[in-house]
Length: 496
Length: 125
Image 1 (cartoon, chains in turn yellow, red):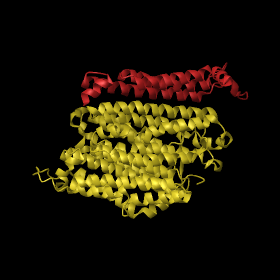
Image 2 (spheres, rainbow over the protein chains, first blue to last red):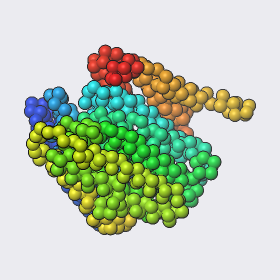
Image 3 (cartoon, each protein chain N blue to C red):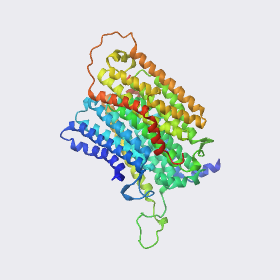
């Protein structure tokens, strides 16, 4: 039974998505409770799966019994299982949050809306588990198509943002597919484990390096890495309030995870390649990742500082945090890798919390910019309280998980002797501090003495999502050492 | 230099891939009409599919169904089915993306009454 858990995790949301339009044909109000129930089941199964993987080792799932190089293989290892718990948890919270915020104009199409959310989550599950390069491409595209449609649902400006995202995202996917076909032409296999055995003989192959660069640029567009990030803030700012938390917390991070898989489970899985694979002239691939991460961390935070729209500011914050995760991943040692993965967990929760805050601010208080926040600051205890906790996490102060992630990343960078990376993390932290100071200055400014209308209590589902995400940020900090221990023991790539 | 050129010209299929890819990319970057952008996007996808097909093409090979179960398998006379399967999947993915793109275009046209990016941006201001 436990062998089937990865497939169950994928099929639960997929079947729910497919059957949703039929089941809810007559009564469209069922779609929300059904989605919540399915995702609750998914959270349970993912926890079972994590427990199983921790105690009995990784599961290698062969589809319909065809063994690895011939058939498609999924592997539920520690890293995938931890990410899956996060993914299903955030998906559940996202759907709970969707209830009162879903676009009113949708009418009967609300059913398709939940269908798309479930489809998105099942595709992301597929990316996390897949050990087949082409399989990752297919799931990337399914996830991307679902997100284009979900962003476009808001109408108006969102249509343009969704169209731009579609154009850029498709270039990314095509480049990734081109890279995969290069690697396939060189190695003759698509399975990651199988490819590891064939790569050491191909170190001097230009097609290998070219293919890798195409894949990196393709996934870079998907994960909104800095030169390719231009689609992301617009798309996430214009998306419906209920959708941006799911997209911002999961889609870019899962694309990043796919890249981590390729770098650490394919390229460096055989000892020779860890520092040895030269991309340009004499730059090893890991150094390239760390440098691009540093650029993203600083530029993203600087751009966030320039924004006055809440959602735009938070989206640029996400751009800078992708950079910080990449710095950790690019150090090529255990400390940096654990720091990067732990920061990825934190960042997903923090991004979700930030966009919940923005969503509550827009839906309940009608606030879109920092200047308007001053009007409601003192009347919105939940909003302000949650914002303070998330700000602590984003800046990286000790009681929150953000601190321990950054701490490990910096330790890893010092261990590897990359003082440039250390400087980038510190500088990006300072910029993050600056834009949160700007935000709080807006909230606590004394000049706003205008009489406010009463907004009333916020709905229970808002309180739930805000409360749970802020509590998770604190819990990730308080229990950071067991979580880091778990990652060190079960989620390490081979040969690191 | 001459060597490099002759090496390229001996592989016309790869040259075609590069030309179609860059052509599509050029259309996407320079045209303001959203439908033309979608056409460029589809050219880019098609070029990648063409690459997959061209690396798997094999002269005088037949469908990968075993001629007889008793003789030893001769891999040389069969075409490799995997790239063709990948191609089919990539085509399906491409068509789905194009469908979503066209749906977005239709919604944009209904909302703004234009498909020209500059006109739409003017109306947004």
